[in-house]
Length: 103
Picture 1 (cartoon, rainbow, N blue to C red):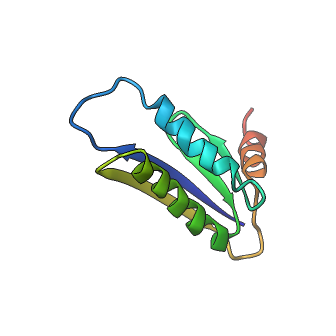
Picture 2 (picture 1 turned 90 degrees about the horizontal axis):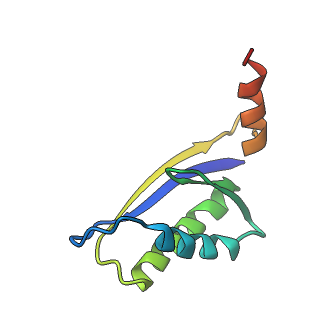
């Protein structure tokens, strides 16, 4: 199981106060891939969870959404956690593990 932390941001000259509509469009695309991946929206990015071979096509599809919405320049940050030691954990398991150490 792999996880990707992804943030896609348009680089534009006219400054918008909110990118909510853009993020919503990207999440509509994510919904189309629910048979292969799971995802979680955070205040700063979206975490995608699934097989590594499924993550890259989904990320490419998300990039395509931004192009189709007319973004002429796009900055995408991707961090991937690809656990190959047999100890794969889901998003929930990772959060639970951290909470075990809280007092």
